[in-house]
Length: 498
Ligand code: NAD
Image (cartoon, rainbow, N blue to C red; front, side, top):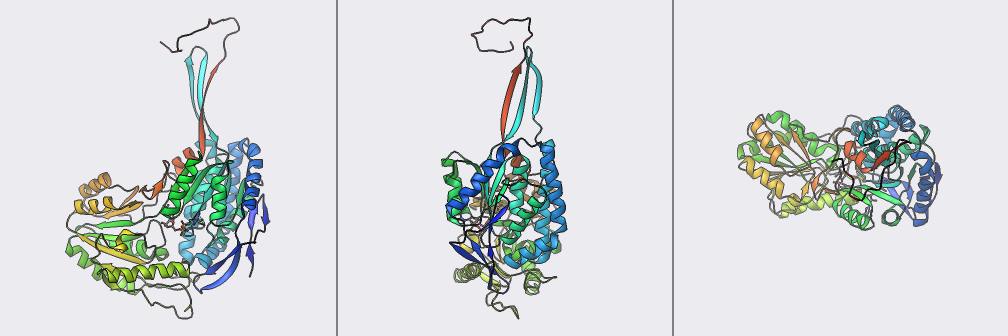
């Protein structure tokens, strides 16, 4: 079994004193060992990034952008290879893996506009012979810590933009599915990135704590679960770092009585069961306004959930693969047991689901609960599995209140044909990303991604315009070139134009 290495200063470096297994969740077999970086290895990555920073920050943005152009081409040329690695270690279907890569590439496209997005602002003659401008300058060495569920896309939310802005980046990807992330970083080097501008260290809490504590690391981008997001935000900001920490979610879809039910059902099937529910924007709660909508929804969902094509992600033409690890599967099964015990009505039960030929894979079948109430754990907590809960309410106002009372506020959507309801929903809902007849309202790369409440700690969202703000510091420069012939007397009053 091969041991996956770190990528530091353009070289593959072994540090395997401590290791963990990487599994193929479809077979349940360990397929690689992964070295977990020690503090000393993390420091090597930091030193490499520090050394690379002066030259990289002074590299013209247009030249940095050229690296991104070549990177995009290499990502496209290697699409199938990357998707295969994602499917093998994450378990999602090949088509889904290609989809996440394509959304990641959109962030590389955005970063390729570096000369345009880094243009400052200029004002001539703000005073006699005085001009002023503001400049967007890089921060220095920044780090990113990413989750397992999008091993290609989420790192691509971060480092292409950070690097295009002139920073050097250290990535600590998820230890559960690191191979596609590593291959993508290798392709960026093949595209011409100088050594040290991007370093990849694999690891666990030890590596993350080393990054948080290092004074050389000026900013941290994190995406993962809420308890870790909160920890990284608290520890990072305490040390004066800039931190954006995106956390967990519980995303609700509201179905109004006037919704186009067939289209809403198709949308819900993909959004609830796609990627086995392991998406931070997955819909895990359907809020039905009125019993009639709920009954009709259940009647239409049940046959489709039972017909889900589930198998090894690496096969083509499937709807859903396994969960990422045995622990993730057991956690989801525990939630289903809990929902049944709490009195929710299990309409489709995914427990005990097996895939012929892959009996040891970490599979759970699509599951549907009806008559779920807000005090149940299956409603309150993020299950992160193929489990959809139906909550019945009697008005749009009650649906909005339900969602606003939830601790998470990542994504939500409404299905309706009525503009007034949609507008009220968009105005009143306390959630960061909202869809109207769009089940997964993940913003495109030139907008920014982020939730509200306990789904995001920090002020700026990820990628897009907020990403540029996060990865740059503004400098305001005021410059005077007095005429040789003029002399100005000392001025003791605060200078002004009046
Ligand atoms: P996770 O929080 O377990 O891990 C995320 C990262 O943190 C990994 O790199 C991991 O190694 C590291 N980590 C884990 N425990 C740590 C600790 N004690 N100290 C320091 N670092 C630690 O998350 P996950 O299971 O990989 O991903 C799933 C979670 O991520 C879900 O909650 C999902 O909602 C969330 N997520 C959120 C978004 C978003 O944009 N809001 C996007 C994707 C995933």
